[in-house]
Image (cartoon, rainbow, N blue to C red; front, side, top):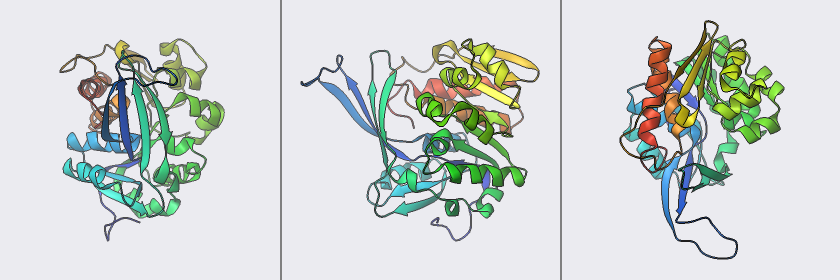
Length: 300
């Protein structure tokens, strides 16, 4: 499954998508039936790869497991290796690497269309017990859980990690497929994980509460740690001891592109959490990484 004879070892095993992001920033709203001038860039992406890349930059020994296409994944893999990520990837000769087209609005928020491509080929054989056992923490991107093609694989990986006594974190990833999956089913499937990392919309959907702080507190009755990203409003930490809010942090420049901000937050927070730092420190570490990524094009 991987290009290494023995499973790579490290602190964090990330299971999730590896994509090519096509970022489109139109000069004005797109109109039907005509052209609109736009800046267009191609960047490495994918929720799993983004988290792994930022963990690697932060010095965390990280392995990324997933599937890529045969002809178009070279630059993506090269970047990941450059930032220190070990790769446990299977190449699918008959499938392209996953691709996302993100339309970035004037407020830097984005709308996305995705083709998961080779990401949908992930199987339980790609995540053997030996690979999971070689890491102290498993992080699973919600896209792997939310897709019916890979759901069983993700659940098996979570179960193996829990049986081995490893800690587990999950990012719900996207509110629309989360609702399609079914909130109750999702909560049942991830029962027993250690860290839940929703954004505000996902926390609202998972809890049934419109107030984000109330949503976080409710979810903290089910999971030891809940960290909710709230965009420009900052982030929340909730656990059995209560809830903590931290304001957003200023980045190195104006907000240009929010693609991958949540993934960068996840990497920063997990780095601090695995180092047993305080909730305040964990939230600030996550937001520092998010502030860095939104000041430039692309998620990595």
